[in-house]
Amino acid sequence: MHSKTPSINLLSDGIIKCDGGSVFGQIPKVLWEQQVKADRWNRVSLGLNCLLIRTDQGNVLVDTGAGNKETGKLREWYGLSSSKLSKGLKEVGLTAKDIDKVILTHLHFDHSGGCTKIDRSGMPIPVFPKATYIVQESCWENAMTPSERDEASHHSEDFACLQESGQLSLVNGDVEVLPGLWVKETGGHCVGHQVVHINCGGEKVVFLGDVIPTPHHLSLPYIAAHDQYPEDTLERKKELVAQAVKDGWLVIFGHGSEEKAGYLEKRDGFVCLRPVKL
Image (cartoon, rainbow, N blue to C red):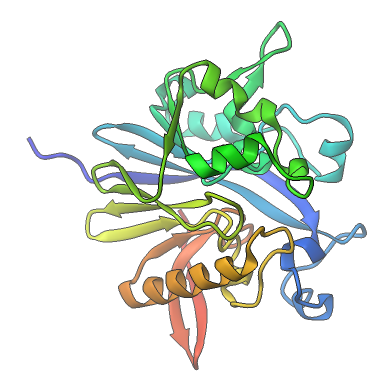
């Protein structure tokens, strides 16, 4: 009996609103606002994109959005609405219990917040009760002991209980998670950031996480101010973009809003996105 080609669905946990200066780093507002408009608090809207991969070996979810735990000021600052991930799963015929693996590109709250929820006793518990959660070991160690610069992005209630429940799987470097499904460490955005490569029949699909968070960041100098190692981000971007153009990858952006996925093409010396709907 032949195994099925993995299938993918792009799901959304909603949007997050982030300071435009932080999102575009050294790029002056007079340039980036030609591509995306900020609100009166200088925030731009970013998608909270998650990828569902269905294989013969189980259902895999890449990233989980911000979830529903954030309250008060943080919710207001980031313009967070209710988590939409469970609704998205339901629309494709699944529930949280059907997820076998969760791959986290990294542990910032807007990617890992949906991993956990608060139970009746007020304690965080895993949202996906049967899933193994896959994280780079270096990312985990950095998130558990963040520096003063990183601690605002890491909320231990999003992920600490995964180790206590025995559902955490720490990996080192590039690992084949399932046949044709790889995690590949990039670093750059943060220690242990990883992207996900999927062989879908004859097509290569790559979920870029935050190393290239939106189509606007295809331009090499566009690197977020909160990237831990921006020079490493730059090198990874060069490699990923060149290979995506050469090999015809379908790329998916962790924070794309209007345009979330597509193919990269060289036109007049510039890399452009040919967007597709997933």
